Image 1 (cartoon, helix red, strand yellow):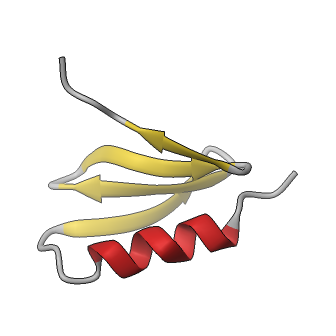
Image 2 (cartoon, rainbow, N blue to C red):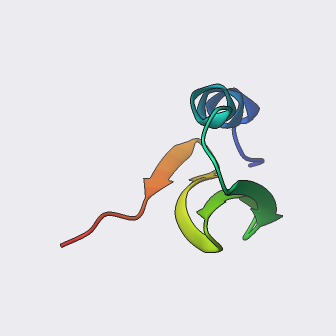
Amino acid sequence: MAYSGDIDRRIARILMDWQDVERRKMLGGTCQLLHGNIFCGVHKDRLILRLGE
């Protein structure tokens, strides 16, 4: 199953005005990096978030 382009586009729309955000294809989907650190991504049809403690 390929990653969901719809979810990826929705994330891109939200993040378009953020500074220092980069999108990369990896792990069979896409990841969003902030200052070089992954903070969210899309794998198959799921949104993946990295949350603090």
